[in-house]
Image (cartoon, rainbow, N blue to C red; front, side, top):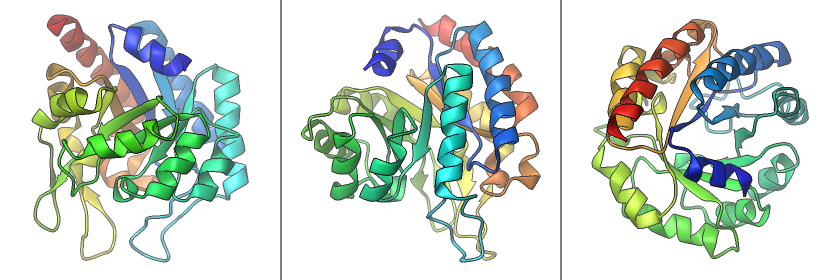
Length: 268
């Protein structure tokens, strides 16, 4: 697939970035346009990220989306208007078939990374499948998840590190895992910077985070050789309808990417 080949052939890391969830057309287009201008200048392959719905919220009253078809059509518009691939999360085999009509990459949430029916359904669409490593899994164990996708006749797979459970309300990143997954899974490995800084299971039922450490985590990820970086961003994270506590403010994206490019060039 063209996207995977572009990633493998690029000397630069690639970027998956956008809002946690599609809140509306204007915000999606604005974020995509802003980041595309930066990544074009820095020659970073860019994939726009936006969930068409959120199915794994802590509370029943949490925002889950603006409607599946409406959100998927917005993702498709981003794809066409800016000529960039798009990625969205899926939570069921039915989601895989539905979303595949609109996006280039199907993303498997960390909690669902061992769900065989979901992995097989995603693989059979022929789309690139990005599987997030479960917070409960070792890096070595991700090999079996990747094999499920490949054995379903789809070689277009990548995996994403997003932190490992540390106690009940925190996550840590073991940077050895990036290299281990590159060796064991033989596919691109992404570091999800913003979700790695979540502080889940808060007593309020709303996940917390440490966005002040985004630059630290991202720099370390590039320094150890991550193939890609995943960042959720919003114009006003405090107003975001999902995961605002660990997002990067949109106007800070450019400065961070410039630093990461310098690190990437230094280690080549």
